Image (cartoon, rainbow, N blue to C red; front, top):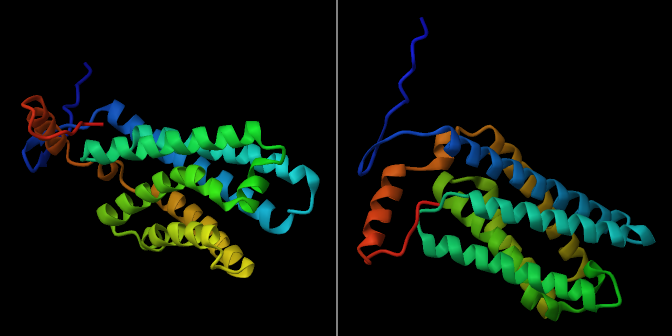
Amino acid sequence: MTQSTAPTLYQGQFGEYTITQGDRRGVVIYRISLGIAALSFALGTGLALWQSQNPGVLSALTGLYGIFCLALGVSLLTIHIYMAFLHRLLQLFWVIGVVAAGAIALLSPTPLVLTIYHQPLTLLGVGFTFAALTGIFFKEAVCFNRLETKFLTPMIPLLLLGHWSGLLSLGVEQKLLGLWAGLFVIFALRKAFQDIPADIGDKSVFAYLRDRRTTGTVPVSDS
């Protein structure tokens, strides 16, 4: 005779809740997509720093950037953030950045990465993608106190704004880019071993905020 196992009850701030297989699947997808984004970014960084003179590398960088953007988009769909406004804002940033990168890739006669590097003003569009990534790092720093995300959160805007303004030397930019890629990989690896319920969050808070939203008082969602 098979004995069914009752789901584990968790005590949240606003009541009890359970974690479903769908919840766990979403976290796994979030972490895998972050890993893919980190790996593609690290590979692209390595090629840009050490193989930039190879003509075929520029095309490879465009492909790796596309993979990075796609994986980041999946991460933004599956991440758990209590504030719906912030969640939607990060997704909007991703859309703006991807549209800008696509337009540059189609209209510019030079490869995407080369165009962005030599025309820093393009960061006013493409940079929104990295603003979305910074939002993920900020959320992880606040929620889980991760050391690497505390460095990544200010490092990304510092590097992008430094390149845009021309205040950073090439050597400093290369070091910051390499450090960014390395810390991103470390972050993704550490996420893979974190307890799944921690990434799901307190579902009673999501339920409470969803109920408040239906009354028109708090613009949030449970996604």
